[in-house]
Length: 99
Image (cartoon, rainbow, N blue to C red):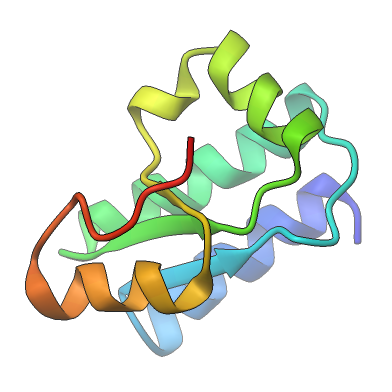
């Protein structure tokens, strides 16, 4: 999926279904600036709808990009999908964060 497709899809999901999303990035081996922009757009749409977008299962290379761009300060990241889901239920941002 291209970055523009991902951006449109994320916005559509937020608009049509849930405002709280967890993205499993376990199979994402590479991300560039257009991919980051798609995630930021999805995050912004979720927050504007009263929700949030959290990331789970980041591989080290992708996690490093989020860290280098300081987007790790924007996105909550978790080692597992389950930990991210628990953080929604408990309201606890510290669920079992990755990193």
